[in-house]
Length: 125
Image 1 (cartoon, one colour):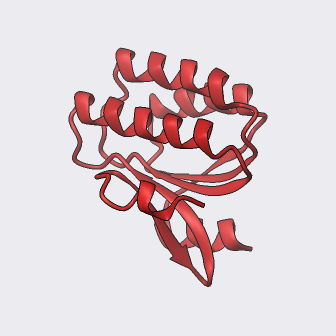
Image 2 (cartoon, rainbow, N blue to C red):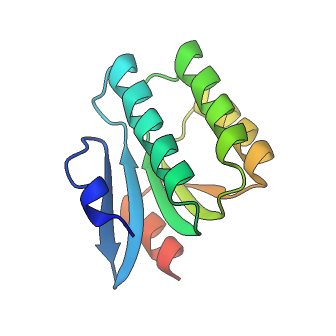
Image 3 (cartoon, rainbow, N blue to C red):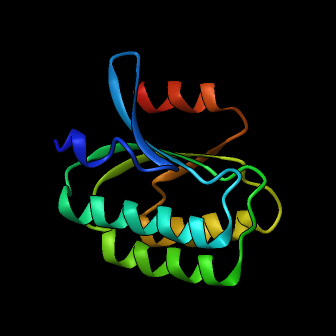
C-alpha cells in the first residue's frame, strides 16, 4: 500500500475504522471542478493499486452535474476490474439514478446509507 500517496489529497484519504482501512471519498463542499479532481485522484489510485478495498463515498449536498456524472460513468468503466465493497452517504433525488447506473457498471458494489457511522460499520463487517 502506498500510504504517502494519499495523505494530502483533499476529499480523498484513507481512514481506519475498527482496525480496517477504508478509502474515504468526501465530495461535501466541493465545487464541480474540485469534485472532478477528487474523482480523478481516486481513479489514478485505483488504477495504480487495483487490489480489493473498502470505499466510503459522501456526496451529501453536492450537485450531480452532467459533467461529473459523465466522468463517473467513464471512470466506472475504467476501474470496474477493481474489486470493492462500497457505501455511499447522501443519496437523494436525482443521485439515486446516478447510483443505480454506477452499480450497473460495478455489479452493485455501492450500497446507500443515511448515516456515515452505519456505513462504516457495514464496510468493516
